[in-house]
Image (cartoon, rainbow, N blue to C red; front, side, top):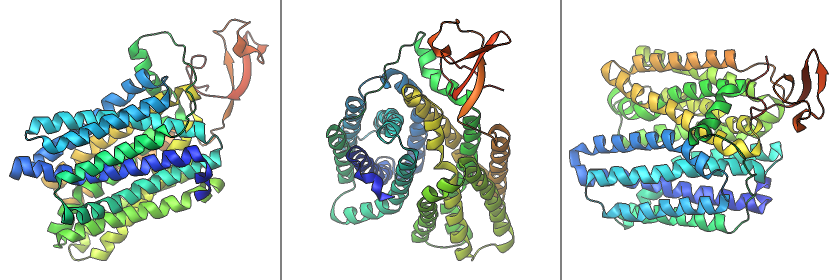
Length: 445
């Protein structure tokens, strides 16, 4: 798997990804402490609002940023966005008003919402071979999992030596390091995009491609299912461990760590698995496993009651593995479903739509558990996961070839795209790797 790091350009991009993730992890811890320092007992409300602002920025900014920045030189765009994020991190320790926190968090997350899809869309151009790209996606997933495990420990160690405000300096260093690594390489130039239409048309292009592609409509249902399962873990672990099982604060971190370990273990097996099994098979089976696990969790919560700590750890690890198996192949589907010039828009659409699923499931997981109980939360989120699995099965065709025969009846006979087409029954027919674009606005039936 590590052989992909022999590619210098990708090695620097992956390094940029890792140091930026580390900085983001430090910021997550520091932000909670900053909220408490400013708001005291209301820190939870402040932090919850900040996280909601993060999701709103992700959902709203990513498509617009892709439309405005997707055709610009990628290195310059990525470095500029990293420097903006570093600048926000430097300013955060000096704020003393809640509204200032909200404003800066929006700027920081808006820059991240612009950065991430463009960064993700660059990797397929750097690694055109699908096997290498699969291993790069796996490394990226592992980096996310390791960050969730190691950043809190790193933050705790640093807090022994310094105040929490200095963690934001670590965040700024992470983003600055990312900028230095990106500026040290030459990235492929984005292909020129010549399109007519409004900013609205450019902004929604990625979403239109996404929703017109059957496999991606299925992927959106998978995102919803994984968000429901993941939200059960991320939102309700604290209350379940402390109130139901009666364990201490450190055990909350242990439970979340087991979820991360499960995800990491699954990511390690993915490259070889995807060499032998189709994306659809892996993803659908993973989503089915997730809703089975959630309903098993409901049984566990209602029948076994408190005291079954080891069972919770196993359940959380299996949910982490299921989410990893369900979500990691998504990048391969996006790469397969768009031309190079449309990838920033498509990755931005996936970024926005997937986070919209989390924006729905995060509060739902908390509200149901608070208003009813943990068992009900398992059942409700399990029902959403089951619905996502059924919708994905329905929308994602079992037979999903790259080359699709189709016809054109709206192009002139001398159009360049029809150079290999055959006239039959008054329409031109030919076959090639099919993607939604200006010449193919609908998927063939």
